[in-house]
Length: 355
View 1 (cartoon, rainbow, N blue to C red):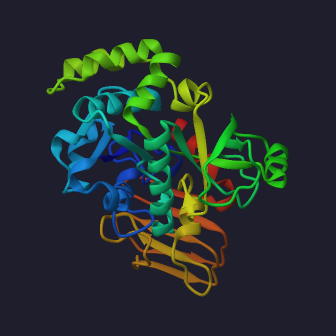
View 2: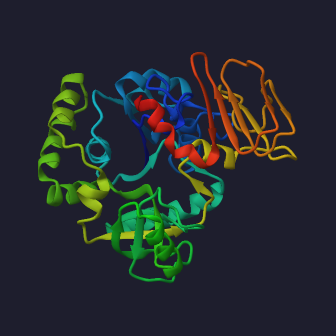
């Protein structure tokens, strides 16, 4: 059977002040009427159904997850007692699913990405599932780059003919490059953005972990029982290394393949990205309400634009926000904070969070 595994443990600090520890970005309706995590679950539901979607999130957000995705089974929402990056999260999910279904195929997705071309995405996933099921490969989804992006990692394929939907052997994974290298990657045609989305048999990823992360694999033996208690989770996460799945497994394994995808993908990693994905008026201004049921679908806030162009206003309280004679700004208003930034400086929001 096919299972969805949604990784929802991120803090989303680049989208402060709307995204906070108590309500990180995956629970915000940034690119539609529903929260990001709800959109992610709905997106893969045609392949998994309601019953076979698992969410790994912070233990502080399990109830919020069930509220956001009402069709989830409560036993399929697992709360991490501490953050340990993606390798332990995936190991836990694989161990649980394999114990219940030895033939389980996992579609592993971050909770907070936007995908415009939903049907094309489902076709890519069907291809990936078939590859993983038949050949026991570890499949990752590569995004066809449209510009020299320095905020993403890259995947180099051994075959440069990156036709969408092909399954290609991976040459190497590359960490986030500087601008010069990113421009070189784009010109070469050999590189894709690393989306952080994966498809594999639960048995295949566990076998890879046994080979490349044996200590983590050993820890999974303690979380395969029918009942998963908080002491079980504490023992697992306290012993687990804080390592990404890319570093722990994907960069080391020999059975890794990538499928190039043109699916209108964004990791929604900044207020600039939110602006880019928002509905705009004739002057390029966008206004959104940071509450479920509103989102980036063009729902009106109490914003007024006078001689202003290409701005984003997002409000949480509904206060009136007036922009006069300004361009290229993002204004985010919450109950206790107001952020005003130039879109080109969107990556500096973390500096405000750290102060």
